[in-house]
Image 1 (cartoon, one colour):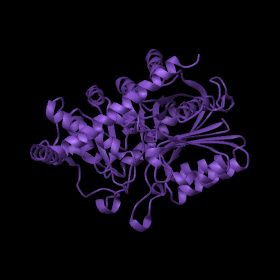
Image 2 (cartoon, helix red, strand yellow):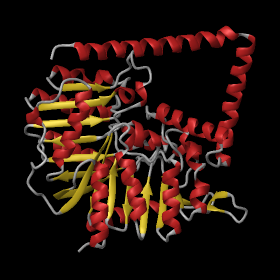
Image 3 (tube, helix red, strand yellow):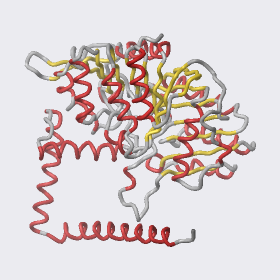
Image 4 (cartoon, one colour):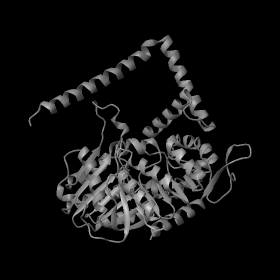
Length: 476
């Protein structure tokens, strides 16, 4: 019997199944893969030894040595007659789409998720942020890693490899990852061949691990509901790692409530982010967390990009979902929720090792948020030396939503603002005042852009209405 009591596990299982959208899978094996040093070789080996099919889905594939290597390998396997299907996100890869000419020429099915459309001016906010690979329907990789030399670091610039986490899965759950891939592929073109996607009951048992595949889609909030459930049922420990933490008020309250109830709640986030605008927004949420008993740590290395959780040394989550509104509500994301004591012990051991490279954030006697020992601790370098290069193309969407949250809170008082948000408010105040002055003295300068945006929105709505009418009156 696991450490979780049977009645509680029964309730949790139902909640997990409803959040994930399908029941759990038994009979799996799961291998923990740490950083690019373990993930990339495992991906290469699986792709190189594939016999029938390769499904490859990634948010960012950079045009560098790592990206070119994977693109060339996928093209070579397609040229050998394997079925190769590739999905990349337009926003994440728009400058590197030429990488896939060789794969297309070799016969691979290459699809670009959600390129800009005149008829959908705001569609760019929704992205395919998943990072999955499925080979021969037998092994699936789920992770937070994109394909880029940035994850390997650059010793010449004093940049360490990025800290990130992935898993390799064998067993019946692989079919669920395939079906999630097919759902995204269908939004980018014709449906994939039914023979390429596994049935729900396909797959021989490969172990004894029980897990859920959470294939989050825009507005479904499956991972958000799962995270709330875990925060509610954790009894001893809830240890979180997140790259772009800008949580919603309900989730912050859930963490505070768990901590007040005696749960050891810890949050590990980057000390310096590749999206600089995220750092002050994350820090603005430290005070309510610390006051509620949550322990907060900042990673001292180049970039912490992992998105993981471990609860009660029994339940773990690994995947692509960040703890912010964009990931929870707007993106296609994919995570696995694993219920297994042995795997969770590995995750907990890795978390404790990560904390040795981190600095704890505390409240001082004067109720100020400060590092526990400024300038001390292993791995501490100057911020200029250790900051990750800015390159995550999702920063515009994440930043826009985060800025909107801060501005909305300033106007409505729906949540307490922290000192870290003062600089953001000053910048936005200057912009708003400038726009007001320009509108008063030169109204056309403001009116023409508004007119253009309004006309664009009207044309987009009209085009969609015409398309929908055609569907309704088309042939049956």
